[in-house]
Length: 92
Image (cartoon, rainbow, N blue to C red; front, side):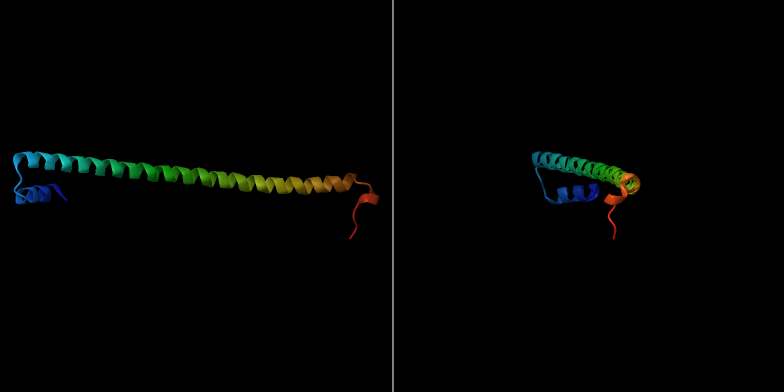
């Protein structure tokens, strides 16, 4: 509720002075919790964005490593065939 609505509801409840103090304190605590919750949500969203950026970077690095390993494997196969005696080369 907005502040004006809270004040109107508090007046309509016909609370004692002590009850009004308790009510006001509870409303204040609730607003503070809402503020902290909103802050936590913002921080969580920012953390998720940072994590996603790091994961994307990691995925790109893994793809690059995979590509280089495939190329190295192909070159190694060529070198093995170059130095393998003809009698050991498998023929189809």
